[in-house]
Image (cartoon, rainbow, N blue to C red):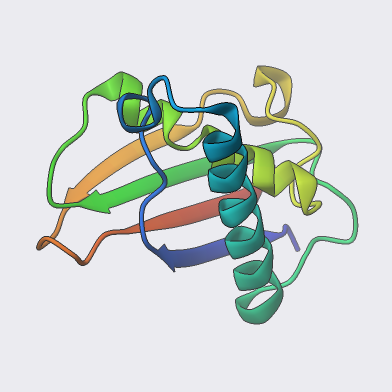
Length: 122
């Protein structure tokens, strides 16, 4: 049976525009925060695959009150894809491994932002 992961994490990773030209330490802190969130939610609500997935279908959804432009939508998930690699869900985020992920935006009320991560082994 193929591995499937479907989780929601409250909060929103910062967009490229929001991180902008901030000090590198701010970016490192942001990335570590999301690494910990992704890993802990996977361990609590789901489970890791026996080995990192060589090929997978990935759907990443940002639920926020303001619609980002496409560049910011996709770039805000870079830290999430990196976290999925670090914690052992994905082997890599190259096109040969995950093709072109599907990026989705959904509207919500202010203060109720979250992300949804869906991974299906291919």
